[in-house]
Length: 103
Image (cartoon, rainbow, N blue to C red; front, side, top):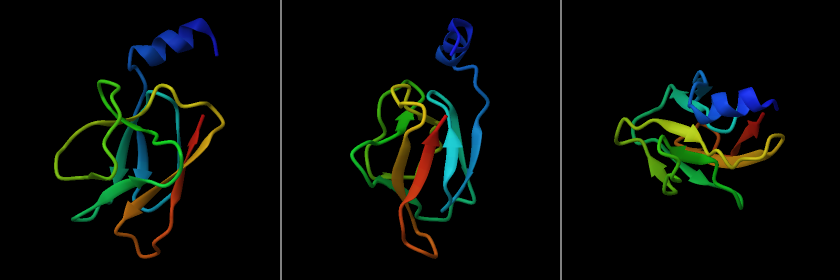
């Protein structure tokens, strides 16, 4: 990644990714995540050794995180490109972990 791209990501100048609820998605470190189709009582929780979700200020979200407030969620800046990080959204028709692929 070029120095210019790194600076752009640090500046938070990345378009949000729209992540459909109960689906895998791809996102970059520092990229905002807009979960779409979030049902009432929705929560996300850690499924593996790594938790990829942070608040806009860069601090990790607690796990589980329930969508009771309108807070901007981002992919933590320390995520390694190429990593596939599992998380569990609930409720879903099929209860199973989903993945964020870090690009």
